[in-house]
Amino acid sequence: MFMHIERVGLRSDGTQPFHSSLPPPVTSFSTTTTKGKVPLLYKSPEINEDTAAKAVTVQVLSWGRGASGQLGGGIEEIRIYPSAVLNLLFPDASFSLSPAPGKIFDQSGQKEQTLHSVGVSCGLFHSGLVVDGKLWMWGKGDGGRLGFGHENPAFLPTLNPHLDSVSSVALGGIHSVALTSKGEVFTCLQGLWWFGALGHRVYHRELIPRLVESNWSGTIRHIATSGTHTAAVTETGDLYAWGRDEGDGRLGLGPCRGPNEGGGLSIPSKVKELSTPIAAVSCGGFFTMALTEDGQLWNWGVFFSCLLIKL
Image: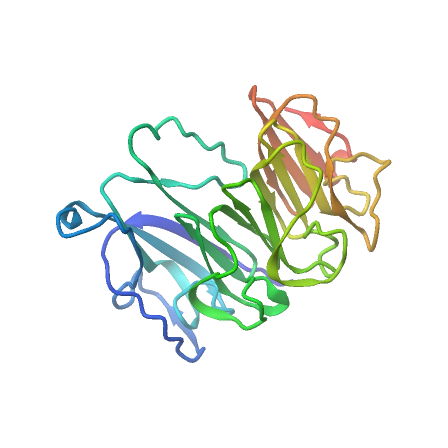
């Protein structure tokens, strides 16, 4: 059995210019928390000579197994402690975390000033970072999971030129899902391998992020994904799911909605048994959990015989 462990975190501290050169991939074992100078990936255009003294540095950290470059340090390595990967520079007290799977996004603090949105996500062999609508990806690239239009790996955070106005990103086993500020959902990778998790009604690879076209009941405000299935919540609280479901019920569509090809359902379908509007959703390996707007927690999947259980 193969186990991959990876974490990415944010903290405040330190700055240095970002270098885009890619060193040759080598394997190393790191026991230090920070090695060398930390590159500066992003600097807010609002920072100038007058505001630089009050600027805040947000630091992205990673640790675990980075055999495919998913730690973002420029090499293949194993980090046993959280180590700084890159810095982001913002005006004082002006940034917030972007929506993440399972998390309710609170906009109550956004009153007079514009908050810069920052978010991270980890897949099995790749990582993603969202900053002010821009998406950086790095790690293993086979199948097109990075969305660059090719299958080459990226050992350093690399800006994806095919997406803009990204509000959040959710990375699955070997596929990627991005949500834009317009409520559009984009996915990429090879749908044939992952049972329709891309939601494009066909089973072939997508090297560039492709829009998921579906008859949503409104725009999408929340996304989540796992190894083989994906979920999305609309502004009206409706939940849609698609991807792998070999009778284990992880999609929540009931016994009458079986897979349409190879154990998967590639068409985003509404979870109709949920009568209460959904606020957030999270996808596990073989199950799904959803939080309603009135505070109820529902879950379904392999351990619940395809039934919706209210907690």
